[in-house]
View 1 (cartoon, helix red, strand yellow):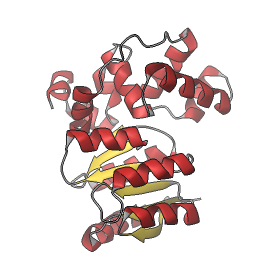
View 2: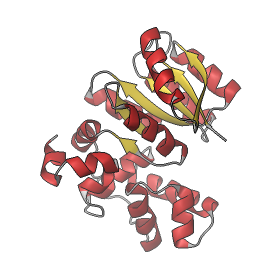
View 3: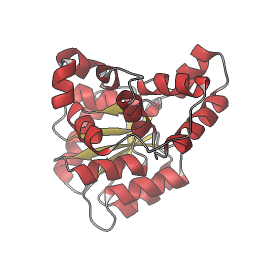
View 4: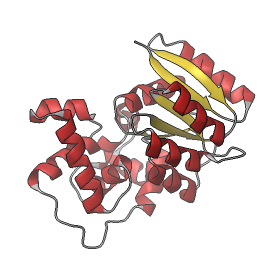
Length: 229
């Protein structure tokens, strides 16, 4: 079945462009559109999409608040944040609210479609420019509770973009067990999302920086360029 996507953006031209780009992929179906965060929350509850493409600056309710409400009420619905400009507070707000992806609106069409598919699979997909902002904002927690060997293993795989299903397959455990490990990891690290946990994995040396970026971005950037982006 096609991935079900809800678009939330207050600019008609942007919504039309997103709909056209996604419509070129038979594996993706746009099931709804809205112009504000409050309506995005209502439609998410009504339509139960796989992914919400969420503009962060919208009237009535902003995208960060809407993301937080959707993720709290509908944890099975993933959110990819969209913005036309990067602001440190905005990036962190979206990540803390639970967005699994973060893209600039000038992203390539393929990158947008890849972000939607990655989000639906529970994989992190963040533009290199946004990741550089996260690196400046997410610091290693002071004295985090020690992760177990298996939790460290799960964190490493999570940071490399593996979805719960892939982690479960590779470790030969159930998906619910993986979810429990991820929950413990977030609690111990004192972070709010998989994306923050992935950034922590890079900062602590568990995963090379380039492995956190989308594959197509990693191929075109050296490690030094990535860190200084």
